[in-house]
Image (cartoon, rainbow over all chains, first blue to last red; front, side):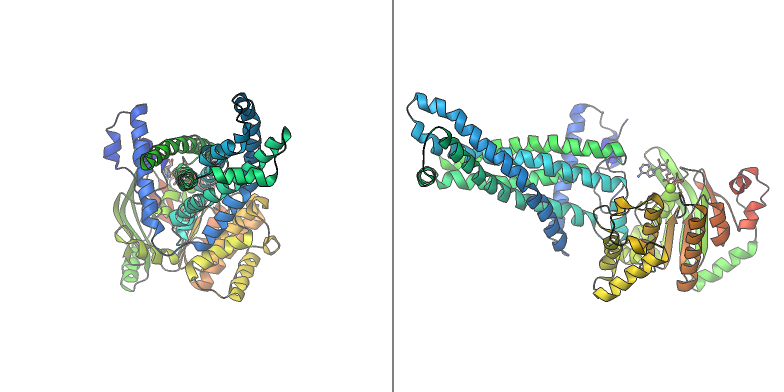
Length: 280
Length: 262
Ligand SMILES: Nc1ncnc2c1ncn2[C@@H]1O[C@H](COP(=O)(O)OP(=O)(O)OP(=O)(O)O)[C@@H](O)[C@H]1O
Ligand SMILES: [Mg+2]
């Protein structure tokens, strides 16, 4: 039978904690079991991350470099999508609000939707598409071309150097990108409001700030850390444990996006439960 | 078994060397399999300091796996593997790192870091293994290493901008820059023109003479083997099928072994 896990990590990276063969060999090769083996090895990968992240030496330079690549390079994409979402949401919401004579609520309503939900989720999905797949493909191709092995021979812990830095960067950069994207989204909304009306900048933003509460901002901000962490971790996991073959690179990139996007929704669902629990 | 016990005296000198602390690599009944595929069945090998050992063998016989065992990239299943007096499978992470500092490894595909320039590729092992190196020293080491392989002009290029042979030579420069005690070359001349191949072979010899490095060279290039080998082993079906000097093996009665030299 196929041994899913050990096939996925043929490189035996240093200290790699793989599933004992006797354990995985006795499990029938069904989709269901594959799923649980995947969850199992992702859990081990995550635990390893927490083990290594606090252990010196810290790869500070690489963390800075990755933060620049992951954060700064995503700005244009995030800005464009943020702007369009703000604009479109405003235009789409206007008729409904107009029906109830509540057009003056437009800025407040759009702001709450963007900041609470749409901004974080859309930005994270874009981020998963760009950064998650990027990390997956990069690490997978490093795996195929033995660059990860070469690092190990050069006395570098590749998990620390490659995985820990990327996961941390993603965790720290996504919240900043979401704040940026939300801000641009509100600008888009301002443009949208003014397409058919005339609202001054001051009025627009004072309406928004009056309607926003701490409860809107804080949970939305906190959950983006989890989104970033999940995206970085899944991208790294898929890349680091990819099959050693060129087709492994494409697969890693692809499944990183799919899996990371799914995780964003799942975490979002959990987050909404948690926040409503505390708010009641 | 086709093992050629060409000279019984060599066994005696091996024992002497061991006592003098000159044995660098020692393998006993080494075994390694991947899943159901048995790659290394029973490898016994002793390599002395300053020796150039060439490994021949058909594609897929486990030559690369064998030298990956030496740096601990591949864990052996069974058997004893002693490097510089230390048993690899018993080492802790820190001790393994210390051993690795003394070993240079040229990967079959070069394993160049795509996200770094040529210069950064060479600086990486320096920074990682020597920790604090003054900038000037680093610069001169990098330049020297590039000159050795004739790549001085490529210093600011990216690996993707290099040709296949240049990549190979850069990989070689990156391995040699630290002047390790043990050098493991995985097909250093494959894919190079005959002239460059010869230059690389001479470079390997030069390094070995200058720093008294021990080298293990996997190659399919018989001209290179002839030039640098003190001893050649031939891998087949997971064991050393033959062992001896270049002339020993070339004049072997075994047609299969001879076929490598045609
Ligand atoms: N990480 C791995 N996982 C599974 N099988 C492996 C792994 N590494 C090597 N093998 C298998 O071990 C065998 C020997 O591989 P190896 O790379 O050592 O061959 P080689 O002698 O170097 O061949 P070549 O001359 O073509 O480079 C092959 O059958 C290969 O499929
Ligand atoms: Mg090989």
